[in-house]
Image (cartoon, helix red, strand yellow):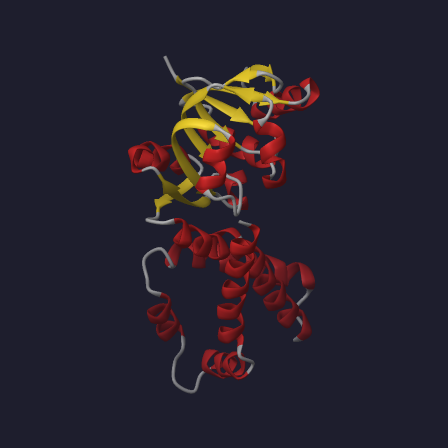
Length: 254
């Protein structure tokens, strides 16, 4: 019999995670309203158990907590019992805050990103090491799960993997705009840009970025000319500062 996972929250991220897990786990969802759970079930394409949030008993359950961070106290006040395992995807919410709000034997913070919707999330994890193996297994179902040794590290990783898609989207848009500026049709620029990212995503799994850059950039060539322009515009420094600012914000939220 498949293991049961209990989702508290029925939003887009909860659905994305459930999509990756539905073949190996039974799913139950806890939410405020029946229509939201019915929509979740229809989108998932699998029959699920559905429960009202008010007075829900989490005892001995494996919980995936997928509500908005600002709703932690409101939701925790409506549930009772002690969970066996508690996985939180609440950005910037410390383990200490989770422990003060909800009872569980073990806790893990997980930070998936938007690529969970296509089962390609880079999810960073930290918390009780008793759940390390299970945590990596669960979140690898929606991409890659990577365990980190501290909450400080997961805040930094959130700035990279959690916010990173927005930064890469900016790069993608700018590259396409540059091609259009030089005379390429917008539709063609988008096709080429998407192909670039698809291929790069595979290659970067095997090569260090510096080595990949050196492979592409021949002396006095087109890439070297463009790269020098990026360096003169302090693009590298801007990205480093973006990660620093995102990390600062993550710590402030916590």
